[in-house]
Image (cartoon, rainbow, N blue to C red; front, side):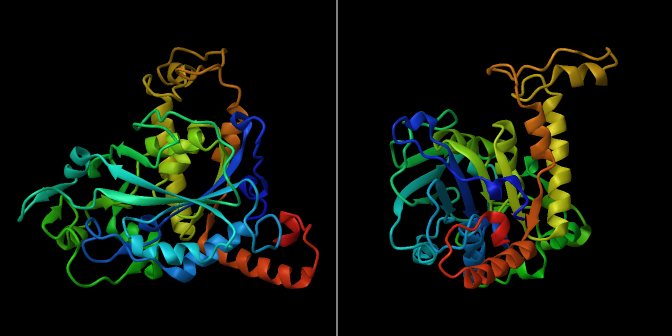
Length: 364
């Protein structure tokens, strides 16, 4: 894991010229960290505290053994609409920190399309959730106007976030999905679901037995949300503790930002990489997409090869073809490897004594 580019990069805040600040974003979304094994489209899974602590500590100690936040790191913690998890989220961080709380609200119409009403009135209740941003000190950032949402980074609200329909999400048969999660990440959940007045379109126990397709991650936010996050916070690298269906990975690819995802296991890594490759391929051959490559389309249509480099729609000429290839080849790390790295980091810290200048390679 220490060999991946994102784990070697340190942020570089610029208080003199905030527009030039570069930060490393570390993401954890409780909705993508596991799945409820009953009515998963309606239920968000509970927080697995020890797993969360292990992932955050691994990221915090990636450059040197320390229990302090690295200058230039921003932690993005999505609470899944469960404010009661905030004390658990925060206690892993040192007392000296800068904390900002955001409210994310999902577009009502797009959220309603995921469900059909079977009793009661109204639409899905869970229209909002919280986002915590945590850093060592106040962020040196220029005010940014969101492109896919309303408002600016100077506020405390993000939205409306327009969700994709279930039919447009990454889907696989239940047998394959179960391998991706592993038994430890399929959580038994009992009692009444928060939104039992509504029933999800599609996945039921019968459809699972029949081998039909269902979303691999029901509660993922769309890539457009992460595109605004990347630009608003000046991210130069991303460590994704809950890569889920790859929405953040796809946004990082579009923005030429170095990305490393910590997956559940090897099955998750394999299938997620295949999903991202097919998605990027499709987008590169769609002339309305920002990463459209006319050279590739010409070859596929038998019109010969184009020698001119591609243009990114709405942006300057692409400079980073090699960078994109590097990110496509970037390792996707499993939870098992993260756990080993965390243990190695603790051992290194014990051996280091008062030496606070160990590099990431020395740590791991």
